[in-house]
Amino acid sequence: MATGAFSAAAQAHLALSREIDLPVAASRGSWGNIWGRDIPAGDQFAWSHAPDESILAFDSDANGNWPLVRVRKWWTDKPETEVLNLPGWNTATFKKFMSHWYVDIHIDLQVTPDGRYAVAFGEAALEENALIDLFRMHDLKVVTPDPDTIITVVDLEHWQVVETIHTSSLGEMHDDRARVLNGGWVALDQRNSDSLSGEGGDIYSDRRVQLLSIPDLNSGPACARATEGRKDARRTHNQRACADVYKATGADSDEALGALIAWGGDREPAAAGVHADEFTEREGRKRENEWDRENGGKIRENLAMGDWGEYPYNRWFAEGPAVESSSRLWYGLHEAKEHPFYDLETYDSDGVKRNSQTLRRLLCGDPELDAPKSACGCRVISVSEGDRTLLTYCRRARHYDTDLLQRQWLTVVRSDDFSDVGVIDIENKSRPLQRLASGDRHVFVLTLEHGEKLRIYAIPEQR
Image (cartoon, rainbow, N blue to C red; front, side, top):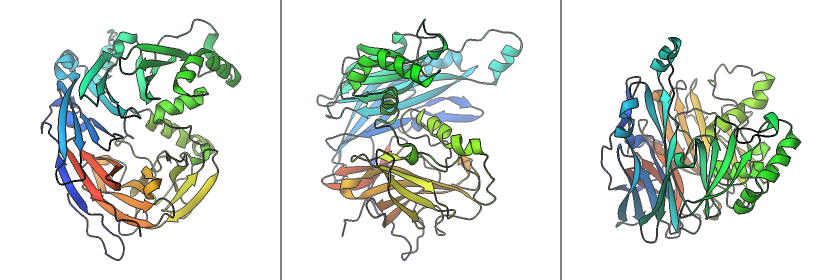
């Protein structure tokens, strides 16, 4: 990994402790070509940190055998790895569609709180290309096939597949999000082109929550959700229709259920949410109208949360959603009044601000990392309050196109007093996932690149 040249007086660079090459194929095929750009299967991967401190990495492979890799003792000189192939999509399935559609793969991996099971998700959706519009201009009927998701439950104790299903077997539904809840259920947030309820007029939407039991993936409680019409009518309908789902998941409202499925936690307090609009260059910032100020951030936050798995890396945001800690505090980066810096803020579950500090070092605005007339954005990745550690990701470009990256880096600060810890430079061509992870009573920064290279960075001990 390339490292940047930092001033010793300005920043401490966190050392790379070790690299682990995961036992997966170097080339795992491609999902086709979009506007002249090949889409490698290695770009779609997910990971999770299990309660036993092992790391699980789940990769897509165009041959249909998707490797799940477990890495134990990753913080030592002798890590232990093992591989289990899971059923997945392959290019042969979509070969007949390639001339009119391109394949959009979404992948996710979640672990039950007790560490007994891992649940792997692989969605395949066909996105229309320009030829479809041409056919429709000539009144030719073209029907885009419905998306489908493969869900697989793995017994982590015995390292074997327990059950696999295709969500297409549940009906003509599109799974927008999925979440392991209460350790015993997979919750699918679904939508359909047809109304799920034949009564009540237009207050009933085409959305549904479907629960599947873990580990056998049998259909459990389900409910059609109302998302349109009067607020009181929606609430009354959802409380009645979703009572069994609320009971199974521990949610007490439609809003709480939506938050559980979207990011696996409490409903985000409005004050902790996205404040700023999408990027404008920090020089020559345009004045926003009132509607943009009030709604732009929420719209973009919803778009971000609508993606499977990790926060989308192919979109630029001035701010990202806040992150909830184990103590139910929310940590978020919001643009400070003093441009181009960020305020790192914490809020309690009621939206009361507990702490706020303008950070002038290690994030956007630091002259050793940022540059004038550039688009620079940072977001909180994760927080470990027990270790007093907070991880953020930043990237800078001349414009908003990810192909024009000038720099990207990770920053670690203390979560209690927001003091500096250090930075990790990331190569511009790299698109790794990042997280904090505990191993042997220490906390580390981990990155995973293309589902095949795990890097571990040591964090200095607290003084």
